[in-house]
Amino acid sequence: MTKMTFDHITGDGRLWAVKYDGEELNCFELLFNQWYDMSWLMKFFKENLKDLSDYFRITNVYQAIMDTMDDASKLECLMLDISDDANLDTLFRHLENSRFAEMTLGKEKAKGQGANRHKSWLRIYAIRMDPGVYLVTGGAIKLTATMAERSHTMAELAKMERVRNVLIDNGIFDFDSFNEY
Image (cartoon, rainbow, N blue to C red; front, side):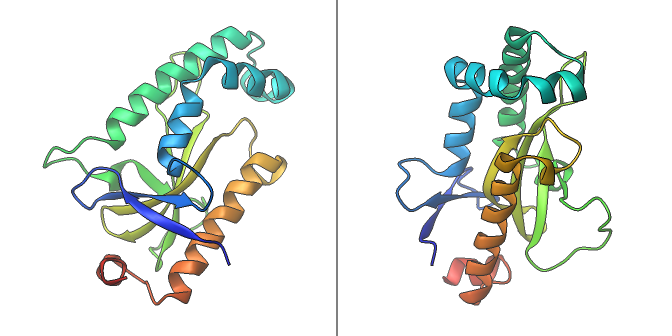
C-alpha cells in the first residue's frame, strides 16, 4: 500500500497536497521546484524535444525553459491566492474532457495560462473533495495531445488513481470525512 500524508498548502482548507512516502517535499512543492529549476527543465526539454517541436512547434529549448518558468510563476500565484473571492473551481477542470457531471472524488486538472506564443503545457493534477477543495496529487509538463502518449504523464495518472483509491479505502468521500481522517 502506498504511504502518504497530506499537507495544507493555503492554510484555509481549500488546497492540500500529497506528501508521498520517502519524499522530503509534498508534490506541490516538488512540482514548482522542478518548474523553477533551469537544470531540470533543460534535461526535460532536451529529452522531449521531438514532442516540443511536433506539438508546439518550438525548437528553442532556452525559450521553452523561460516560458515554463514564467507560466509556473503565474500558475503558482493563482493557486496560492488566499483572498476571500479566490475560487479554485475556476482553475480546475475535469481530467476527462468527455466528463460533464461532477463525481465523488473527481479527477481534475489545472492548466497554466501559457505564453503569448502558445498554450500552456503545465498541468497540476488533483482530486476534488468538495466544491472549491482540492488535493493535489502531482503534475507534469504535457507536450502531447493525450496523457497516454508518454510515461511521465501516465505515471501522474497512476498516482492520481492510487491516491483516490487510498481515500476511498479509508472511507474518505468528501472534505468532512477527510478532516475526520
